[in-house]
Amino acid sequence: MEFLLDAFGEAVDFLRDSSGELGAVVGLTLLVAGIATMVAVVLGVPLGITLGLGRFRGRQVLLTFVNVGMGIPPVLVGLIVLMILWSDGPLGPLDILFTPTAMVIVQVFLALPIAAGVTAGAVSSMSRDAVEQLAALRLGSVRRGVVVVKEVWPGVTAAVAASFGRVVSEVGAVLIVGGNIKGETRVLTTAIVQETRQARFGAALALGLVLLTIAFIVPPLVIVVVWQRPDLLRSPKAILGSIVAAAIPLAGYLFVYIRGAAHPEWWGEGDWTDANQWFWAFVSTAQG
Image (cartoon, rainbow, N blue to C red; front, side, top):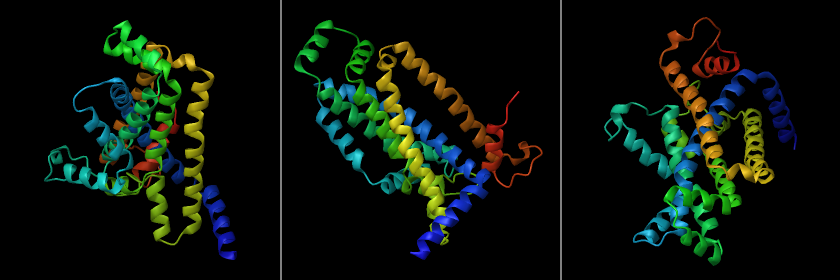
């Protein structure tokens, strides 16, 4: 019992004394998970709608892949992506292994089946009358998808929340392709692994509490906001505008982080020991 109390005390001390380092890790965690979730939802929701409504050759095969992907071991996905991005692999010349970009890619592969599968399940639960009315409208693919999203918006919201939960709490795949490099690719889950290996249980517990807080707050927040404002999912312009508005700054910050990590000479004057500290200072400081 004393050991546990000591660990909780160390966790409190860690949270109080390491705000800069902790903020950098949390920032990178949210950045990578946010971009991966967005890409997975943009690709997975239309795929789920197609699988839920469509009756075409190969549909069962695609559904099988999606269902398998929802439960595939993350370390296996990480290994496959690692081999693809390895120097001798098909995408080796891109030289993005052990960078946040590689972490985003592997998390997209993990979240996409979740987004597609949950959406497909929601669409499949539509009443026969709703499906027949939709078919009678003879809409194009895009307009039909918008109508379906309006009809099953709680399921789509759940798909977004589940996708984020999948990637923000994942450790095996990002550890393989990111390398857990301090100041470059260390996120909350890999930091917990690192601290545990060094028997720094207080720090690991503190990081775990932060991760748990994020996992508890963000997905329910998405659900509550959309539940209170379902009209947000009834406007194609609002949906597209939200995606673009979120994607532009996230993509811009990811580009700045990657380029800045590769060129420390760009950091300017400051007491930064690694790229994470520099980037968090950059993000936290008013620009322009």
